[in-house]
Length: 343
Length: 289
Image (cartoon, rainbow over all chains, first blue to last red; front, side, top):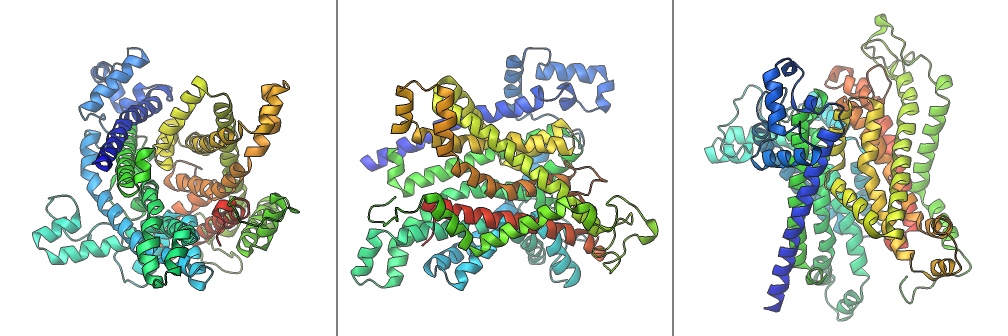
């Protein structure tokens, strides 16, 4: 009972922390959009629309631009609360609507990358720690260092050159074959949609298109997962209770699986928040290379075209997702490790 | 340090760390790569056979050959010379980003940690909020609002990076603030500024410097990424990320992207090898068995 109490207190405390963080990030995007630019109006109204006094007047009214800054912030929050991120200069549609359309592609890519990173990174990290100093440890280190050092926009191009252009093993950019029609939208996740529709050819096509970008994007996360798993497992293996378990004559596999890994996974879990930041950073580059219609590519195109409402809207959305990912990770952390709840 | 660990007292931790570092082959290889690139950057006019901006239309898009080691681009510019001159951009720009982020973050973090109070509360909340954004996402937004140029990309990177240093430095300062030697200095009336400069900062800066060396690679990478997108160095500049961008999807002219990419990769790998070795050598908590 007491334990259950501790956990719910932990969750409530953590939930309450989200409010100031949300205020903080909106305050920051507000600052970037209203205080940094010389003319805040130019961040809301496109150059072409500036010639229309009625559009300008409407924007000034809607965003309270004639009011002092603190009041403008309240206008900003009010509009945000109504899901209004402004209108994209380029697509002429509400930014929120654009983001809703592009988000599923990013989610699909990010989930596939994370699965790839965990599937390879965890076993590699464990092996590297158990056989510390062996060739597999060196290999793991090399893979991690390459993952952290390779520009994703370059490795993506190189992978396309090799597997698409030279070997013709995998398809080129895009989510599906350019001659195919996009599946009817149910969730926006092509793998899921094609599966639900029972279109196995399209499913295989979407899966094929997902391989290269998710490997390129997941590599950085793989490096992170592998490194943290290795170092935390090494630390745990030096603990007294591991020595006790071994002294009792337990089989090495039991020592590893039952005693060591459970504790070694805690730091790996906490890095998932960090991994998400890495995925978003990587998604910006990877989506650009692979013509992947997600929010990363949307943000890049918007940034280059100086489509400010779109850039700032995407930035804010990513930050908010990031906050909630960290929230989930922290709550899980408390579930797994009771010591955290006390703090 | 854990009880029961035998520490040879005849050696200072610095000497011990330095020896570990020198014996670390990967770290030394990294240092060698960085050194080579520094020499290339300094000696660029003597190494590059052509002017990095000179166009020669009749030679356009020619593959690597003895005359053009790395081939030529679509304006007939020599890719090898451009890669060589690119070192003059990427290295100093990466260094500036890290140096300013470090100085700004360390200063703010030290002041916040030492004096505490409202200043501490304010700047650390600003730091928290900034760190709530994945760094390149926020840098993208700032660089775009400021307008695309290499200078603005650098400013954007510094603005999103200093909080990491501030947080680290603040933690360091808090951990030594109540040490005897600081108390002793305070009790004999040494001015605060002098205590910070002479006693606190020298005793807290090692992790900051290690972090800076680990981050140098990422700084170069991120600047290349912003230039690749089109928010950093502008066209005729021989910047590696911008060069890769020019050659993208020109699969028949593979040399356009391959060589500048290898340049970025080797520099970043060099910094990561060295940074890794520095951390292993000077941060005993992370040293592996």
